Amino acid sequence: MLRTVTAPLKNHEEVYDYCVSQYAKNEIKQNFNLLRPAVIGQGYLFVALAQKGGVLALEPIDVSKNDQDKLEDMYELRLVNKNGISRETYDAIRSVSSVCPYCGFGEVSELDHFLAKSVFPELSVCPLNLIPVCHRCNHLKGATNPTPEGNFFFNPYFDSVPHEERWLFARIEIVNGGPKLTYWIDTSAFGDTLAHRLEFHFEKLELCRRYQERAAEILVEMQQHVEMYLSKLGEEGIRLHFVDEAIRWGKKTVNGLEATAYLAASLHDDFCNGNFKN
Ligand SMILES: [Zn+2]
Image 1 (cartoon, rainbow, N blue to C red):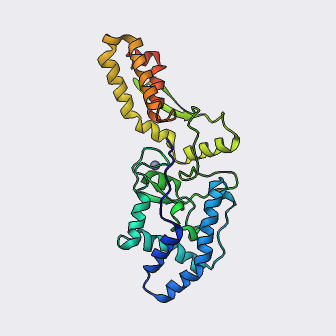
Image 2 (cartoon, rainbow, N blue to C red):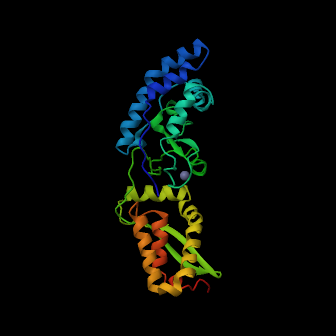
Image 3 (cartoon, rainbow, N blue to C red):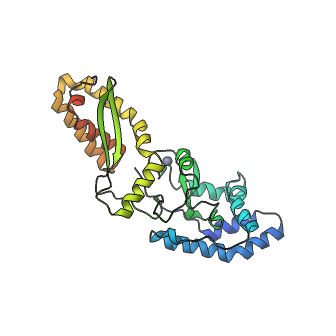
């Protein structure tokens, strides 16, 4: 399930100044200081637009190719670099969440530039443009930037995903001699913009397939439960257990892969009855 996370406490000015201070040459520092007003101004504009869901309107600042390259390199050279105060800043931003907010289950291992630094190099060390993510999500998202068609990811600092309505679904099918769990999303309850964005996020990050892989363990546990308790509880007792589990997990979010899996099991007569094979 996609998550919202609390934004890092570090501010853009502080991080930018830390990074600049790590350069040895005065000439380079002076150049970065000349760029500072435009860079910091862009950071404020980005946040103001993101808070309204309007990052599509943001355009890169107009600087020379050489300055673009230097701003882009600042991230790797001065923030990710394993030594110094800047690395503490990197770690502090990464630690705002231990679970990847893009997929909702991956372990956070790195930072993603919500707006790619290749297009917006001036935001390469802007904390609110840096999202703690798992490696798989970061790899799949790549340098994808928002497009006018509304193709852009959920930003866990600024956007909220609907939690009241159910939009993640799963079904169990007995295929090739065993149960298979399949996930899908149904966004028909939402307006075009939200529906499109949710579909884009899921498709690009291959979340339905990854949920299915992730749920393999739950499926085995559910099967074991049926095998152990069917003779004692009967089909209805098994079904009630799955409903209880769906409710328990659903208290966290109804659109979680666990709640959805248990609900799917409760709705499948053959599964509740121990008929796992076709
Ligand atoms: Zn992830």
